[in-house]
Image (cartoon, rainbow, N blue to C red):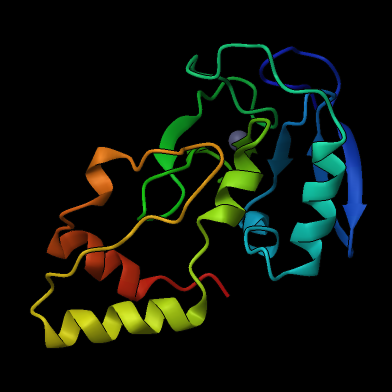
Length: 167
Ligand SMILES: [Zn+2]
C-alpha cells in the first residue's frame, strides 16, 4: 500500500495483533473498523500507536486535498467528522470502510474522546432537558479556540452523542 498524500510506501505496523499502515509523515491507514481499537486514549493500542506516530515528522502536504483509498486505489475517500463533537475530520473509504488519518489527527481524536461516563451524562441530560444542553468542547492544543458549531448544540447532535458506542 502507498501513502495517499506522498505515494511513498506505507509501513505495516503490528500492534496487539492488529496491523495498521503508517507513513513516514505520521499518517496512518486502518482497515475496516479497526480505528475503534485505537481511538480512545484509554486503550493501550491507541497509546502505543500515538507514541509511534509522534516520532515521525509533521506533514507538509495540503490535507484539504481529496485522496484515493490506499487499498482500493480508484476510490476517492470521503471527508467526514470522526465524532459528533465535530473537531476531527478524517478520510473514510466508501468501498472498504478503511480510514486514513493525517499526521496529528489521532492525537486530536484522543483529546476529544468522550468517556463512557461523559456519554451517559449526555444521554441523561438529553432525556431530562428535552435535548437542549451546552457542551463545552475539550481544550486542545490543536484548537485553542472552540469551533463555532460546538456551542448551541442541536437535538440531532445530542441524539448522536447519546447513541455513540465506540467500545
Ligand atoms: Zn478502500
